[in-house]
Image (cartoon, rainbow, N blue to C red; front, side, top):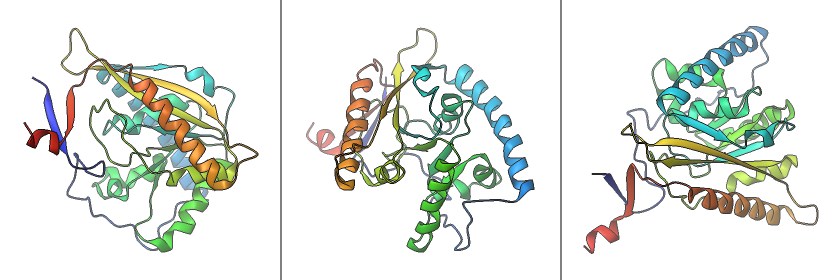
Length: 256
């Protein structure tokens, strides 16, 4: 029998750690120019790529469809639904290969002992804990975009494991591609029932590109790209045919 998770709003977390309240230091650096750091980061990228291949291909059994649309693009933003704790860390490395992805994430991830300290080396861009850090954070997004690195964003914000529905999400992050006039791609994780394994297999669909429109204002383009991404995710999500975990609103449960 499938597990059912009941929720009141899309802002709920179903995976929490004891480091959920971890705060970035005021002097946190998102951009590093030291040659040793860059060299270690380069080596670490290939190490993560190997782990990503093993974990995604053999444990999650991931198939990536339409990856070829990324072939001729360098600087782009990739928006994805948020349904895997480790998969959402590793899958972008396979999707964006041979480009190194930089993934916007919660600062709570950096609070995990040992692993948390390695995440920035691997390409994690934690959201600042305080407003004062926002300027440097945004500068780092533009910096890596200018260096032709893909930027990966999970607009749903909260991890809902194995979720097959697309949750409504904020349009806040869509000012990045508008500010840099960059293409937007969509990565939608879907789930299909396995004949052998308990967990469903995963198929990830890549769609795009979607560009800011020349005749639109900044606010209109933010809304435009938000809607394009949301509609594309909703369309692709229909290709899921199995819900390992079912998500229902609490009102529905209470009325039974």
